[in-house]
Amino acid sequence: MGRRLHDWFVATWYGDTRRGGWLLPLAWAFAAAAALRRWLYRRGVLASYRSRRLVVVVGNLTVGGAGKTPLVLWLAAELDRRGLRTGVALRGYGGSGGVARRVSATDTAAESGDEAVLIRRRLALPVAVGASRTDAVRLLEDECDVIVCDDGLQHYALARDFEIAVIDGMRGFGNGWRLPAGPLREGPARLAEVDAVVVNGPGHEHDGALRMALEPVAAVAVADGSRRPLSDFAGREVVAAAAIGNPGRFFEMLRAHGLAIETRTLPDHAAFTPAQAGLGQGKPVLLTEKDAVKCTGGGWDTAWWVEAAARLEPDGGAGLVEAIARRAAARGRTAS
Image (tube, rainbow, N blue to C red; front, side):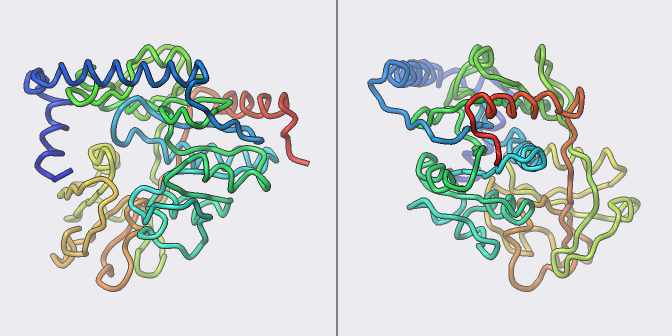
């Protein structure tokens, strides 16, 4: 999707909803087709693959970023800490796609996608990508008790044992319309069927949901991995660049910690040059961790990525981890 067209849709979905009214007939057709597709899977007309391992899907109802990957990072680490051998499967957006493959510690974002490379480097757990999430899951079955899927709530070709829906607290459901008139892949009623709902950041309210906050830990130099407190950038002219689904959430996190920033917004998953990110102006540039994995080669001397940790409330997310562990135990898939 071209940048101008992308910006038009985002402004329509989350701003002036009247502009998208002419798309409603297409939205109704999309909703009907999606409902029929799901009915065919439920009836067994279309086949779903049931893994030998416990499958946890972390997805969302809307198009674009809602905060799934930070939650997957947190959840996979917590399950691993509980003694459950945990792996992560995903499409690998931004990568070369194609046949399912394991992600190695030396893979680049161009090969496996930015999210997959980020997860593999951060967690050092088994990660697989593929155009077919089902095939990616198959690659992990022999060495995992639990497989967490980053995205795929609507990928009904893969059966799942536990579903988590993430809602962007800032954007919510936008205008509440289905694609393409609005951002929704499925209607909000779908949330009644999932096992847990997590709202990312303040704003949107949902009864019984957990609330996730991303707290910056440090700024890490792209060039050499050195670390410094994010507060070191307060009172300075700083550029913040992001190529994620909702860059505004990253920018607001920086502002909330006292930074005055000049923003650069790029399409989700896009590769970019140092100049496009704002380097070369004599100002430090702050990036998301997901974007930093794409910054290879020279020219990144004044670029830093912001390491952030997810915090869930209430109870620090312990209830969510316990519920998944119980589901795994019930199926006899706890770690040896």
